[in-house]
Amino acid sequence: MAIAPNAPVAPFGAIAALRIVTAVESAIASVHAHLRRRRTIAALRRLTPAQLADIGFADMTIEEIAETLNR
Image (cartoon, rainbow, N blue to C red; front, side, top):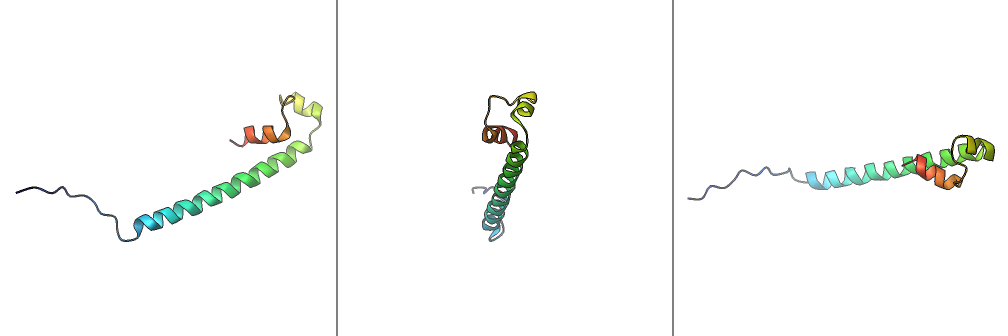
């Protein structure tokens, strides 16, 4: 007689629900990242080139700086 291992079984629909929740969380995170990037760019555009050089961002564009800061 063979012994079958007791494998836990997910409740009906649990995997689909998990995938939906994960997709929604990912979409929300993407929106937050986009908004954070826009706020960073707006704040950096208010700085003068001398101020950007003072904080070490003289050789980068504002978009590159925002990308670096929001990783």
